[in-house]
Image (cartoon, rainbow, N blue to C red; front, top):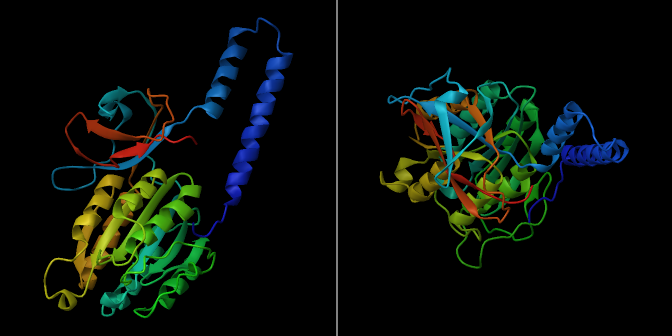
Length: 344
């Protein structure tokens, strides 16, 4: 798969876990046969931190008018996995946790007249949402998938990569993903090639965001149409699920190109966002709508709740499990619909 870049944090995390495990083993070997209850409890707590998989959910809550609802507490929520109630082990309403964002820009031929406003609005979004604690990367996709900028906290590097994007409707190559951090990526089939949207989503989720921890989001600026991807929409959604990534889609399109009709990928984009806890915002070729949409997304990302629970189903069987979060007042919860129970 694409750009096999392993993040330094993963190596440090692995080393830390091994050190902790060795420490616990040494403690157990040297401990008396009947340790006091406080020591036993401490050891049990440390073991839980190493061995138990906590499922984390970042989500928004809105009222009937679509406005964000702040100030809720843990007791306001109930979480169900495959219809079975789960015990909430962790809850937070903080909005300043580090954020990792993937920005995906459609540079296929159909975007010729709207790419300029995407660059302008994208620059404003980066200024507004990114802090020194956050990271982002940029992918542009057309007949190829190109990693324009790998993970960075530098707004200037991201803006530079965004400004360099350009329309590409020529003949694509299957030599791999171009740009910084590039590596082999499965190109589309031998059939028509035009917009490798699903491949780009898969790449962003599987090869970039899956290696990161914490709050993650993917923002797509596209008309939603795919042509030539090897990846199917269901595979792209599965990759986003496994990367614990919220997906937002801004349907940006030249209305003249479509003759005022429905964009071809509207249905699949709704599937992608509804499954992962994001949403679709139709922008068309209106710069004001695009600015407002990115502003709304910024507010949602900075006003998320976070719930963590340990599933009562202990089998790491790789199966998909449905999730549902309910509130006492019947408020609307915008969250992903499930997760895959894979070993971590």
